[in-house]
Length: 295
Ligand code: IPD
Ligand code: CA
Ligand code: CA
Image (cartoon, rainbow, N blue to C red; front, side, top):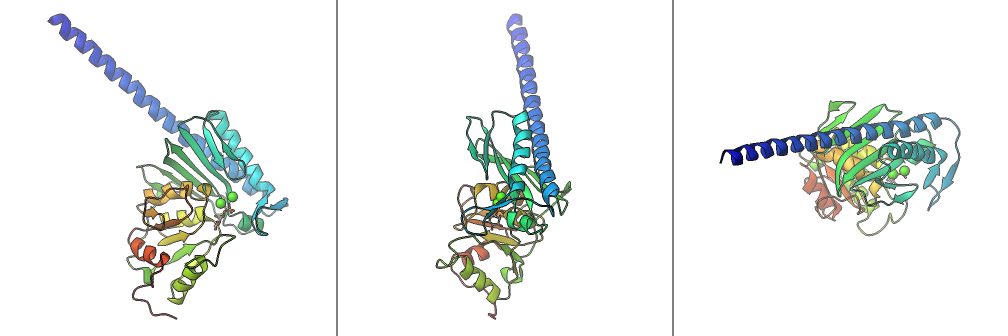
């Protein structure tokens, strides 16, 4: 009997020790992921700074103003160098290179410059955006706009920050009194109830709708409470991956146009302070703005 008790106590202690090592290991990995993420956005941002206002080559993707510059490629390379040094086996999805497929549980979703048209025109609204997924769930996100000197960071269940200070979505309750932001795709503007029609409807009700030209910054500014809501019709995963977590962690709501949980792998995005979500969702789906006097 005594032997059994001693045996049990020994294994309990051992199990606790294993558990502690495991927890420390996970904490260590989380720390490494965060450090690498911040180093990666910084490395990309250094390339943005290096080329900003200087000379660089510009080429077109589909459509005449859908640009990619030498700086997009330089930023992507600098980001890859940082990630691959620490995590050579992680999956990568990046705008200019596409997928680097591995069977890792971790996936880095990278936009080396979000707001390339702004960047190419010397407009400071451009950034590096990187989201990190673990088993299909976004766990870390960072957006760094180096010319504005704004670093946004979010970790799942730990909140969102701007330059290390906690941020929160706004408290606006009514769509008619809200300040919104949107973006326009390079194609398919005129489809029924498409981007231009929705924009016109909101503008005709006197609702300010801004267009910054960087979806990642749009999302961060919803997270920071500067905008009450953001919608866009055609984004790619690298545009929204990091900003998606920022809005969530800042207390906002983010869905597709039907109100389903948001996935960065589908194009529609509706991100708000939560309070005006259903009102904006209805308008995006064809309803008129309630309590508005049309202009
Ligand atoms: C673009 C920006 C823009 C959005 C476009 C994106 P890019 O990303 O996020 O705000 O309206 O749909 O393609 O090309 O500058 O990385
Ligand atoms: Ca982008
Ligand atoms: Ca880009």
